[in-house]
Image (tube, rainbow, N blue to C red):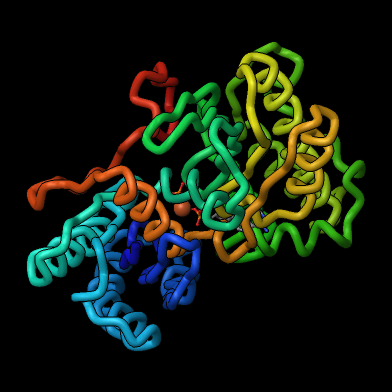
Length: 341
Ligand code: ATP
Ligand code: MG
Ligand code: FE
């Protein structure tokens, strides 16, 4: 099996070739960080235009690196949502055009499913069902991954996603965009106990996340002039870890048997969060799986891999399938006030 994957849902334009043996034959990724940095966040119109300019050359480079032609590919997998609709449309329409020209099937991939299955690309021994903490720029969810296309969502955020909280807090501290990696770096120089920040909903028995209050507390702490940015960053990161630990305890108790605790999404790059999850997994005697950082942040290898999983099951999608700005992994989960999906 050989799948070409395309990703364009946010601010990374990417193409990758992945085979059924979990080999990433080639991949190219172009980040738009520099274009969006002056605005402190992703500007949808700029993102869509940049995807439109870059995607085709990245696909050409990916095919030529692997010395592969479209005839040798089994299917084209493209992100079809959720995400910024202009960007999603660029990738999906490109995928449709390639599928039409080559006569190969199209697989319309849910970007969140790409994140959710990425640990199986990294680790061949990871079996369903597993517990997944999906923490990214737009999402913060705890899911039971029961199989390809089968997700039970136990928790989501009632306001901000965790990556969003990292980014907004970084902006308050003047660290620039994207904020997550900068916050983590600065936190290493600070004292995680220095600033008394809230742990929203901890101890309430609530399974969902909330990070808006934490971000506001970061703003107040910064404006008070009493704390260094490093101490605020370290205290913020500790508060985030405490919230995740508490919510996971409740969700895992309610979840039923699992093979592993797995983390995915851009925030999974964070070392403190990984360490906390490793401890939780140890205490529950399940294995802990975290994909390498390059597979955690947005990339096309995870989209190609989701394509491999679907292709193996005989799935494909019609060429009139629509791009979707919102696309929950678990459509049965009760929508929560203000939640990401
Ligand atoms: P979604 O997948 O929900 O549509 P997205 O694609 O923008 O959102 P990802 O690329 O998966 O999100 O993740 C980006 C987020 O990860 C950003 O919010 C970024 O700040 C955060 N992030 C990246 N590295 C780190 C880190 N080391 N610590 C904390 N957060 C991080
Ligand atoms: Mg990004
Ligand atoms: Fe993402």
